[in-house]
Image (cartoon, rainbow, N blue to C red; front, top):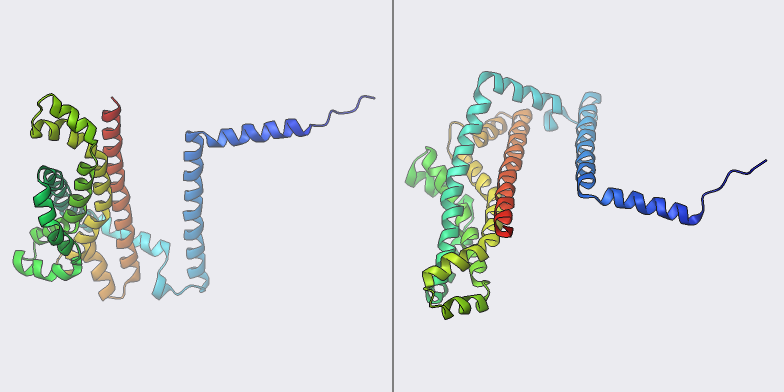
Length: 278
């Protein structure tokens, strides 16, 4: 009677290597991480809901996922949810373009004069040290309680970070390439457009990515100070009425908006990288 062949240590090692190489592939790794993240979130939500229903977690202090979902559904059906998202999104995007994009352009332009950049450095640092919450009341007084004041707050939140990151990126341009273009009698404007801007683009995009969170926080802070609509106003309304379900529903909206904005900036980054490779 023939015996069943037993797997050798080498066969086991090969199978282990094939399994590891399978999970190292980008697609499998990405989907595995996504699945694990979904399972973690689902487990936390399930535990939270069960804890509230069994009395282990205070409904008054922590609400529950089902209560938060009910708030989102009710406000969606009434039209308040989309109106709040639209207002906060507009404030964030406009302020982001003015502050982050405008700051990036200013930072790149500082490359033209090292003297002006050194002269402006302490003032830029001083402005960057001012917390948004400190200038928000002043901004409301100066620009009123409408959208303009929130846009100014968002722009203020973004401008310094974008300015400094883009300027650092411009300074890191390869000096040998600059000298090469100068040897061909290229003007400073040509060097700036053809070399400095493309070289600093990754730094610019990094500044934009950092400013996504600052922009959204600026809009929420502005709505806290004075507003009659928006996601920040929704959170403020819930906290003033001790409605934890409304507060958490607003926080969920902020998280979703943050993920969407980050996704858009990541898409822009991929487009820039593909353009550079081409």
